[in-house]
Length: 356
Image 1 (cartoon, rainbow, N blue to C red):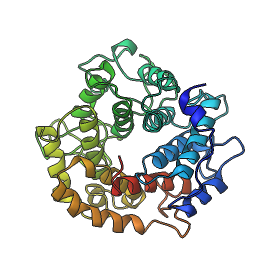
Image 2 (tube, rainbow, N blue to C red; image 1 turned 90 degrees about the vertical axis):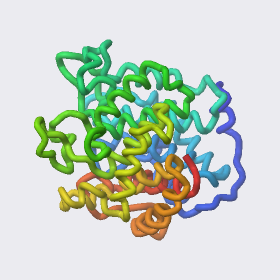
Image 3 (tube, helix red, strand yellow; image 1 turned 135 degrees about the vertical axis):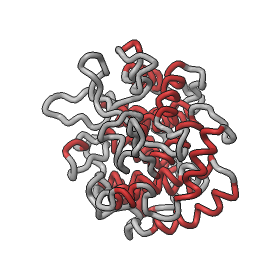
Image 4 (spheres, rainbow, N blue to C red; image 1 turned 45 degrees about the horizontal axis):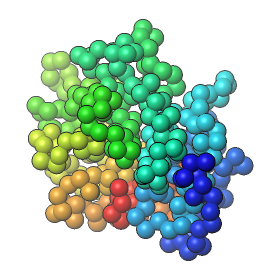
């Protein structure tokens, strides 16, 4: 049996710094060990929500044995299920790329020296789902290097499912945690996609994709010829994280430009760029924004991090429930589901407390 899974079968101390949220999570766990939501059918299988929550738990810098045991049980349940597993109709898809990335990241944090814990299979899954020349996308094409949601392996001419910077960011951070070097072809291709999402000659911020379709343009399109999607906060924070995870140093011009974009515009819970362009959508993105922004704190200079931290913490507290779970009343981006919201809230908490 792999060392990690053997260790996770052992008892842990009973002390825990955040008993309410651990108890709340225990009460929401399904009979098969997964955290599955009843709010949205696409998440009903529970793989992506379980993987995200497991990652959020292991990243807590003050996580004790009880917290790590909860994460370990969730990961064991996912591994036993064969996650990310192909859906059997009529099952929903449930975001397999996010599942694989969060599992890989969590396993790498829990047992960095254990190479027999399922990471090889997860890496293989991610390689199969990246848009590369092996699957029909050539290096000059804007989609090259991206990851979709993962409902099927991408193949031309059928095309890929939804691609975007968020999934690529989660994958790159998982690869970094798993010690996959920046010279690995998967990382290099992903970095190229990330760089194409940046308005390098303009404001330095990021959009969701480098293409001009609706997925890139939550903040609208510029008046340039050809039009380019406008930068906004969640994607620019993701862009900083993705560039650094792909191996670019803090002083690289691309990183500096993206951080400067955030310094000028990031002030509170409102998502910059979206608040102005799509005020009806913006409230539904606030927890994702706060976790993405918080997770840039270890990547920026100490003065900037110290200036940002109180505002992020105050904004995050407004979404925390009495049992230490999280909830956003706005419902356009699934943050009104308590499992989704709690995963995002705990990821932000970890970064605010000095975690990864």
